[in-house]
Image 1: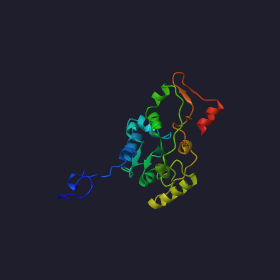
Image 2 (image 1 turned 120 degrees about the vertical axis):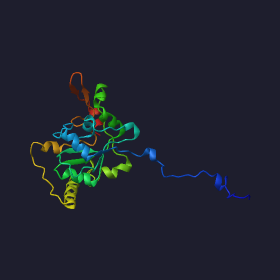
Image 3 (image 1 turned 60 degrees about the vertical axis):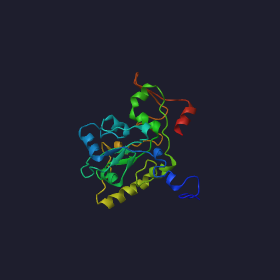
Length: 234
């Protein structure tokens, strides 16, 4: 064998090195960050209505957050920057949150939920008016992919598919861990707001799958056909 030949088709000095660190990277989901500090600023400047449940649609509408569903961005990653100054009592739905973020919101008597949205649903939430003007029926939200099921069914991460009883237990555990008294949710003027939660198939608050929003006549058209009702309820 000639000098440098190590069997195979090419010697070592002609082989192209391969690194698989980025294998499948283009398929991974990205969650653009939004800090608690920025969220508090949006609330203090009246760009978010804390008397209503907050989701990605209301945050995008405030002008303080931007994301691109066509670039594998799947929603809000709420970060803990400003956790020590966050003081709002809110009901918020995000796509990703750490333990410290959950504690910062529940310490004030608020409620946080992590929920998954498929790309098509995210396009609707980013620009609801454009979708309503198209005259199409509101579709169903898709279930999480297999690699995200564990996160969104976990009570520790406040997943929207988690058992409510386990979520209550985890709220108490987190309060004991961080050393704060968990405020009780009293039946006052904001009780209904704090208890508001979307159905796993629901995209917009107050609007069910299968409904058509008519902006021109300012009315909502609801299906009556049993087959359609069965399809959108599944």
